[in-house]
Length: 260
Image (cartoon, rainbow, N blue to C red; front, side, top):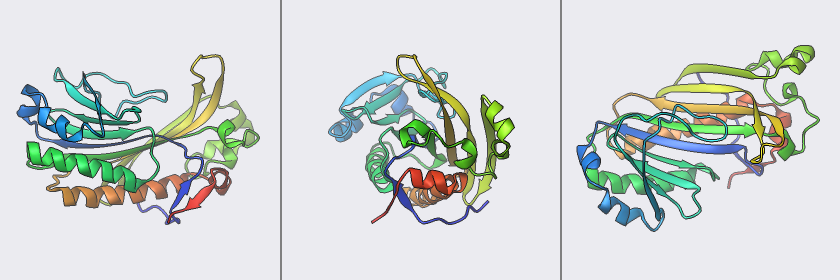
């Protein structure tokens, strides 16, 4: 599917709550049996916090946090920035970068490129077996000052026609949809719907709208150049998919800024 083209913007009120990119490769036993001392030495200035954790599959996430079950008994080596907003992980079969502080793709790409160059020099993966780039947006009306707007005014009719009927829309307490779509160079698992979120103390709750797009390919990919050719296209498609999913009213409420 080709999504309509829209002018690229950066939102002043950024709805992104998480962005994760993961590269999978055939198991590298060196990582499973030896701590990544050399790798840590080279990335420690950016990611000084280190811990060993059980790896979690990216596919299992909820609104508040990433959750899941262990993929296997092997450890993941986790490196975090000092403010803990950036999270770099390696295991014997994947490397990933995630952030809760995404501003623009170029910044994310620069950070991951740097880590991948170090990783490839030390561990020399033969090729990549899966590439994924996931964007999770959460629309919270109170943060945008649009509590008076119904979801039918904010979410495009073609992805949630149920919201267009006032009586039905007012009765909906939860709504979740999932599609897997073919796109150039891969697929996208597209999940969206109404969710309830609470404050940290659990005293209040509010309806929000989740737009979760996981772009991926499971084709054999050789070399960093080919990796970024695919990820650049995924990024472009993600912006178009998000804009296609929302109305002009919501677009303007998030205060779009031109990209210099």
